Amino acid sequence: GRRARDLVAAVRTVTGAAATYLMVFGEANPHFHALITPRTANVPAEQRTGAILNLRHDHTDLPGALALVPAVRSAYERFSAQSLGARA
Image (cartoon, rainbow, N blue to C red; front, side):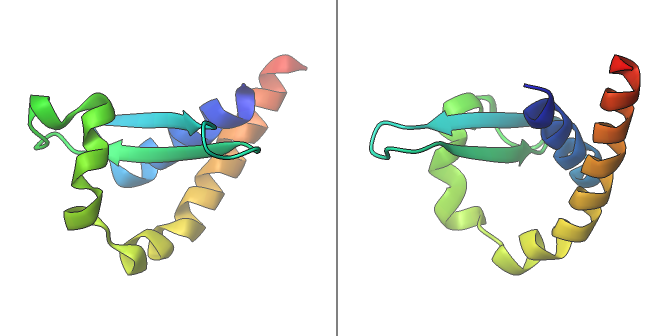
């Protein structure tokens, strides 16, 4: 919905990603899990879409991800306010 769209836009804006993926998982969990992951332009075609998950072990940067949280939150709030304003 609107919140997912706004969060994906915020992640893409802050990271400058060539693409941003929203993946939803529920097979092994009785509740909702979503992963939003940016993809840079240098990721080879065979590692794009769902195959991007294969890169997680070699490309995980928890400190870097945590450092982006304030900027993503701020961008999300801007996109969310714009979305709500467009609905009014």
